[in-house]
Length: 342
Image (cartoon, rainbow, N blue to C red):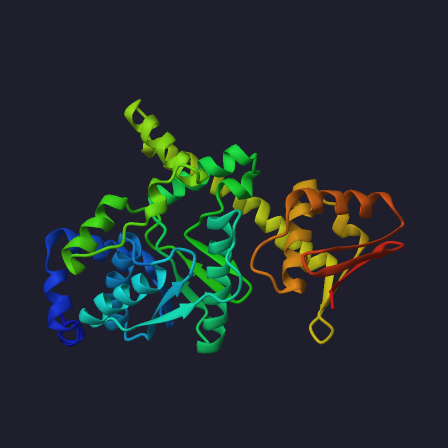
């Protein structure tokens, strides 16, 4: 080992270093370090589950070795009665292991329908707002291989297109934000091992056993498929191949936006020429969705059915005016203008 590496290694506190010496954890960390490859400051979203606690440990080691600033954020969603107590417990556990975390609290009314989906959306909004305040654009999330499979089946049952099926990608750009999922090809069993070995603790979300939630039903379906011979390696390869195809479509979406639209930053308006709507339908659909997301300053893309209708109306009519995703969409002759709704 070079003197430089030795000096870096010495900076890892003894408590964390002793955990890293475990053979299994050391192998996992080396894989983590080789795959993350970022040299900028980052945020780590921590929920208290085994996946996010494992991520917190691995990311802390990474930040020390790479001499980066890392911020650990716990979002208290306030949906479950014990969420605040749980958030403070997680913060205390992390602090004992030299990981300082901040609790961010959700405000406003609690959702009564689509609870998991809306809570997830709110969590991203809070993380994005805090990342703006901290001026850090890299956000690490604890999604793992099991989440990837669950997301694939959920989207399949919804009738999602190519992009929806592969939406849980290792790295996603959202405006200036980089959403990074360095654990996406890790098994949950490895992350549980890290959480137990390092922290001797993790939160078991009670909703994980509630079959009223679609995700839990899907989780049970995958378990049944495993027992009946589901080949996860082949499924993983299928998802990977779909991602390659999706990248091709994304290239043409980027080209369409670049060549057939003009953005005014001062006015926050996007002007689309007629060639924008002369592309293959999937390219038009995604391009317009990205355009509305950019002007509307939203994290999530707009709903498919509403967007589909607007595209048909724009192509069919010489004059059109409608609203979607916090934007006004207006067509006059061959030009379509997207501006933010006030």
